[in-house]
Image 1 (tube, helix red, strand yellow):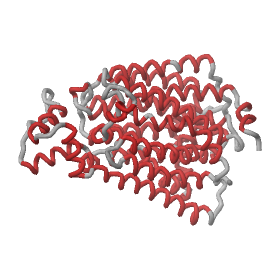
Image 2 (cartoon, rainbow, N blue to C red; image 1 turned 60 degrees about the vertical axis):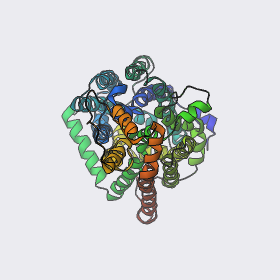
Image 3 (tube, rainbow, N blue to C red; image 1 turned 45 degrees about the horizontal axis):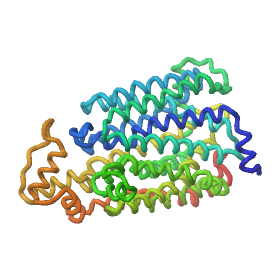
Image 4 (tube, rainbow, N blue to C red; image 1 turned 180 degrees about the horizontal axis):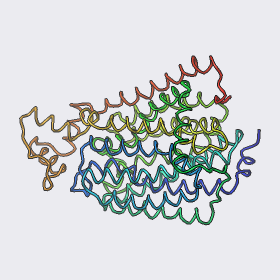
Length: 478
């Protein structure tokens, strides 16, 4: 087996070009996406949109589902017309999409804008994943995908960290940052990206898409592989609460000013977006070490262990109002993520035919798409009823027989909470603590951790009773 240094030296230049494009794309995406749940639901008085949790869940769940479903088609398009052309189209679409999401205000318009933006991501995703698969082999895939995942998280830390500092000043700064950052990728794709070799495809565009759908359908007729994808949808549903529910939970319940004061900063400097970015920071620091350990184990074993660890992380993330416990939860969550998510990508990359990497990597996005859709459902009305501060406050007011005007353009959610605080004779902190002790919103962890735990159990049973009975050509060995 080659040493780590030898593996690194043998990666071609296009491997590194692809990784840096991923870094800037993730910087732009997560800089916006980690703050998106708050942008959709915070009070209009703060410059956000003031949508309900259900509307947030619908927009994020549906749009992001399409982002991960459309690679089935966009992967075939890239194989047909060339990776470089599709990358350029993706970056143009990204810039337009970020502008629209940041400037539209109605639910319908924002919903459309986000789907448009998600299309840009769908064009980009299968190409970069395929490039990593094409430029690695069985010996180097663990390290290669580990580097790829580290690049994802470098971007995933820098973008949200900046957003967390600027969004309270102006939400426009978040979207401008994403537009400028994605624009850097034009330099890389024009000057450093080399088009990979691919088979000549004389089919029409429509025929290529139809063949792609047919190939996907044929792949999914293997019930064992289909069952694997269904099980992994549960993992992604639990995992995505990092973006769908956790920022809202932090903003509502956790005293983040304790962190600001501890670091000698002004209250309000550390935000929910800043804290969620720590997931990516922990991965940057630990990913190569975890990948080196994981490369010694079968992908499924690593995934099962990682998902179990992630379920413990979710428990701490949604337990109590102490920000240090939440950060500890993010650390545990990140370790579980590092052990499971890259191995999932590696697993599918190994089974894909050499000349159809983009197509098969597109297939791997199906459980991710389903996970986003289900995550949107769980973070919508259900989350609002069990854990949203505004909804629980409305419930408390009803039990006390107190009436406050409904939310309007001139009477925002922030005004509603302030008026409630006055009527109940409590300060803002006292009101938050009272609602927390009265309604126990932290119990939402039972749902999210339970889902991850159930996924790990199903994956263990799948490996124990399904795979070990019949060895399939697509099943990687240890």
